[in-house]
Length: 127
Image 1 (cartoon, rainbow, N blue to C red):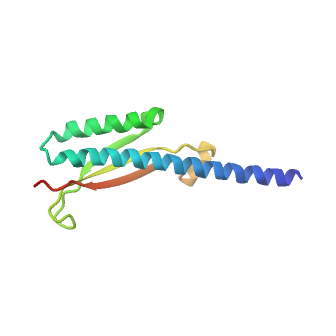
Image 2: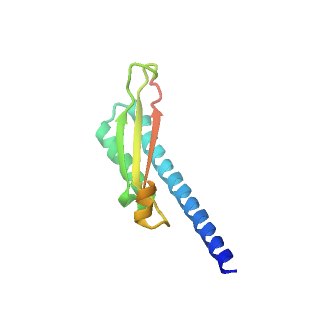
């Protein structure tokens, strides 16, 4: 009887951990995509790139709430001679700690302690 309850609790904790991580990844993806698209859309207007990135970063961190204090956004150009057909783009790498139900030393050993997502958005061509 007690063995069955222990197995049930372990399975329940595993399911809760997976769902929490999936939710965190979805939120991180959405914030990174919003930041990349904000910069990519405004690139064609000739606006200051640093100001665009700062505004997009602030907006993304605000959307993440308290979790945003621990997330880092890095912006990069997608300009390249191949594959973009002369178009410009923005890449955003969002990284932050995982929200985990697993003890920290075990999560670090299994590589579950950090999340990192890369989003690439091409700028719309200007007429």
